[in-house]
Image (cartoon, helix red, strand yellow):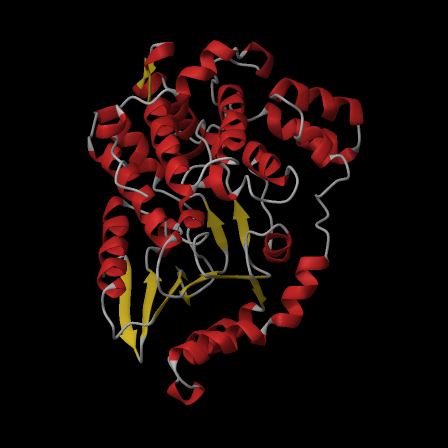
Length: 369
């Protein structure tokens, strides 16, 4: 059975991610199938809106998308498979397409929504979460960075929440996602099947009326989520994560000494020190970029992650391959980060990540606008 299920019913294109055993992690073929569908439906007058959901082992919903297929990343990097380059180029182009989609695109973000799952949902015109939503950009835990436009959408969270989420990979839930602007609508998970069905119920009027009804249905619960301050939004978060560099963030957390600060410091000490510095620079630059420029920057970054030529590291010696090995391949959870500490990272190690390997005219995402 296909990893992407699709259908058009009464003016609505319906997509179900159907790789539940892998938590709907995106493969290159899934990225290509999604792109093909969305381009076809964009130009099809019979399709007036699109809705996307995930599936779990029991059926629909319950899990949205856990990200990109990191085991594929690991294998491809070790074997020199050029499909690794294709994956990121095509995934980022898909993210851009979704952000600029001319028709309503509704993302049902139930269950796990991480990494690449954020990439296919953050550009939605309606981002729906539930009490089961577990949302994160945990890439620093595998020696990577929050890509798929993370430099764009995380940097636009209130205050310095984006830096906190990007550096720590902290998991937030549905109400928290609404509160920080990473979701629009809060639903109870037991409503999802009925809401999904209502999108194609012609008794609800035309497609525009059906989408409008969905927005208004959840107004009360969404307003409550917007005004409920997350427990992790410590009063010291904006002070610490607004500091000018990672070492200063660490110093601010140490000086604070609160339970939240010490827990956050512990989390940071277990992430890739090199990528913490890269990610902070990514977020700070992303705050001033439009999406197309951010995605081009991220395409440069991901090339450097797997081919870190200025540090003479690639393949198994790269920070990203080592991080994936420790988490998902050997599962020893003992990555050998290089450098091993936050304090050992220098500006000369970080700056070349932001130098493009391609001239502008040959950039793989040069066509984005």
